[in-house]
Image (cartoon, rainbow, N blue to C red):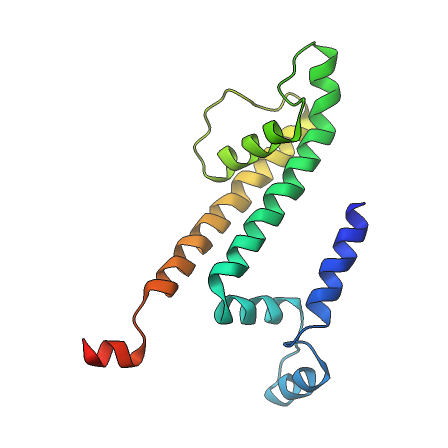
Length: 148
């Protein structure tokens, strides 16, 4: 199922305003290619709040689903319901991404711990990107700075 989601996301990024045929030609004339990274940078510049929010939500749902796949059989085998529903996995991912780490829910398998390790690194990046985009939203424009 996630392969389908991956293909949909890839199609959206490959066929959007920043990677159409005219954009590719224009970018090539400036000496670089219009690829996924360029499209993401353009989305961050044009609408930083929505782009970061969608990246954060997609990351939480994707990582929580992956964590639940690996942890649910283990916790069922030891008769605990820590990862019995999707919300518990999403809660664990959000707590890890924000580097709070309460410790009430934690993975018990090595693949789950690997997912949590990658989540902590990815979360540090996303939280810093979130702070940067909020700063960009509240920064003054050139005309606003002149009037100040």
